[in-house]
Image (cartoon, rainbow, N blue to C red; front, side, top):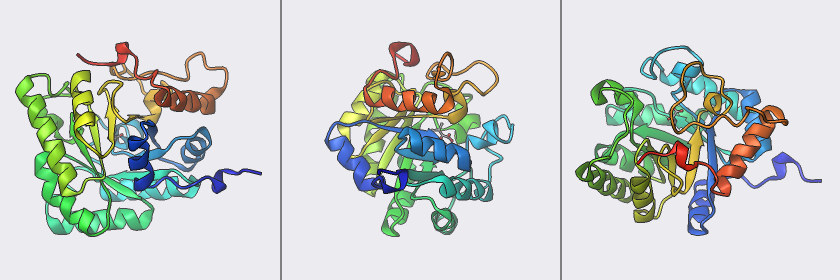
Length: 271
Ligand code: KIV
């Protein structure tokens, strides 16, 4: 009999091998025990305890109020439901402003059950990435639209549309790979840039609003199920609408669509 717990655990090596084999992987956010159990059953490879919880769980209008303890609490909830997926934890706003805070906060999230931490930024993340990687903590570098910088960026806007900015993102992604990042997450960039970054790197690139050519896709749980009020972003698809198999069926359909390349479709992408 095959049970969920007998499935092989997803590790950094698994994700990097999947990229080499040309096999896409599916990531989604999860914040609690039941979401974690459902995501595991549906075949999600990576669960992100994202600071999007500030909006979708706590009702703030940005992710800025989220604390390390908030993320840690949800990592512990997700960990209890997890059998084999990788758990990635967001380092929230201002939790990596110097070496000591970076190491202490990342270490506490790893002790709570994360297998990788995610930091938002660009080339300037090189030092923190190197520091964490040297201490055995895998890093996902979140580039492109970085929601923790919404005030600096002047809103949630597509990044990398002008050729100079696109070249800079490609060059900085390469620097972060050299610094020891295990994966890159690219948010809200034109399809051509998502493709270029994925082709330029050996490590996997996870896209959200970055077109169909990245090595993986991520969606927020509440977006994937159409639960968040208001107008969804262009890159969102509601997999629950009209789905006869309920929530688990919707998550399963998302995983299948990521793996067979049918999601994202042209209507979810930026030019
Ligand atoms: O916090 C989050 O959920 C994220 C995703 C939007 C990638 O960072």
